[in-house]
Length: 333
Image (cartoon, rainbow, N blue to C red):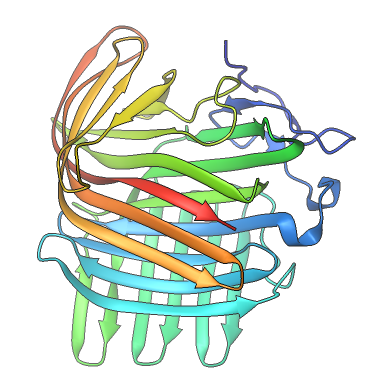
């Protein structure tokens, strides 16, 4: 049985060991000073993704202590065209980014240096994302529509003081624009959604995972999901949850089944018969980072999801052509 946290408590105990479990809200307290690991092993990031039926915009501010990144990417996954790919690598940033300790409480995270300005402002259910970079100007507003989210605190078998504290917030309505010189791309609240991937932790050097997240409408009702496997000890808590009409529905372990190459259909199924989704990919957003001893590669596959999902009360949802992604990552960092 997975442990659900309902009351506030620490992510790490007094010896720096993680308290494993999951929650639907940010109830655990992350204290960077409680981490019992070398400073260069601490990883912290805020990753936002904004997408509609063809466009995807991604913001990143984060670090692995000895290497960091500020990045902005915009691409059309239907046409297979990349419009923006801006990245600033940071050498030995350690704690200079002042990453927030809570994903839900009001806060500001910003980076301004070398002609780059990126700022994430959080105030209650509204998030404002801004960026000015060379000839690029971006402004996005996100409105959270679902009080539930997926929060996990995972241990690693390799090291008793290694941990992964992560919150995924989807089911956010998005609107705004990206401007580059005389070109503009807009996100309309009618069909655009936002996602936050907020992570803090100390990991083993080598890690591998599968992850999928999506938001859409089923007959006018907002539906979302977060699914993943292969990372940390998921016997204590898996990162699998459905969201429907404002409520989270916890799933157990989920398996990702791939074909001979990434562009073939992916099948995502749970082990209790509550989930059976097929992703039909149309675009492979491959990213690879090599810097110092960092060696990361990720295939993020965009396309449409169809199949079924079963809620806690047994209600069967027919999922048809929900536009989103699934990814496979192999990292050494």
